[in-house]
Length: 373
Image 1 (cartoon, one colour):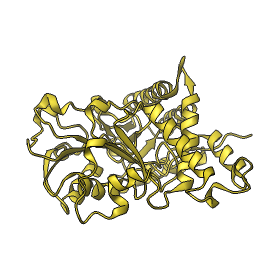
Image 2 (tube, helix red, strand yellow):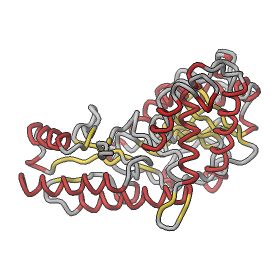
Image 3 (spheres, one colour):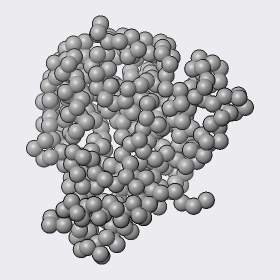
Image 4 (spheres, helix red, strand yellow):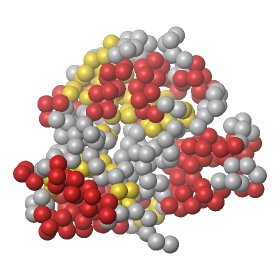
């Protein structure tokens, strides 16, 4: 079989080829059932077994404590920007750390339901660095503190989650981890709720994962729709309404792929984290050494998942940027165009991107430098 193109899309993003092959093989007849997963009743025995295995493998991969519920929901991260304050804020105070485009959207949406204060904002540095934790202005009576632990557009990542208790804050930490969930472990001792759309590292668009601590459910505002009330969803084991069944099925296959993944003498989540570190270091090193390209993010918070980059100085023209993108496509390096709000280029190197894909991109960067530098 010929090599598939390397897909650097920010999402919906590449999936492991082995998973896609299994999906194709089971499309018309899942394990002798005579049905496609898309045709199954979400309450039937066949799909129930899929959902239960998916949740069990996910809990095992991320070592999710028993006092956290795992909810399979819909609406993506943007919907959770409303669903979370409707469940947790009680109409009170919410503090948001704005580290980029997505946390800025979170703050804007939460204002519809709560008294929102921006605890810190990286806008002055054009979201190329993270506001120092010691500078955050946190209110003691905030219902929760929200941050986006990896900003897909801006390419900044919290490599360590803040310890709010060490800052004298008793509020639970809520993290939008859409673009790097399952790329590394999560320190659950510092988190009250985590959420993320599945379409980066986990599966097709349409599935949203929510991990919520037991004590945080049961406090939804009266305006919260029943299907978005965490208590209702938890009690119904994510079957209150028809969940995104096909997305759960594909995610479950990805979880099994991750559990069996091996790299550099490691297995599972430790292995995928190590490969992600190696991929990111390889690409950042090439950009830092380049006379033609640059990454503008501070070195201590560069994302392992999303790497925005630009042509330097006088080279940074629309014509040369387009030439780069055209040449990349000819080399089967796909979806490298930067987000429309910031321009330039962006390489999203999620779990499914092999090391060979980043090596191919680095080789192209050097060839482009030779031609135009």
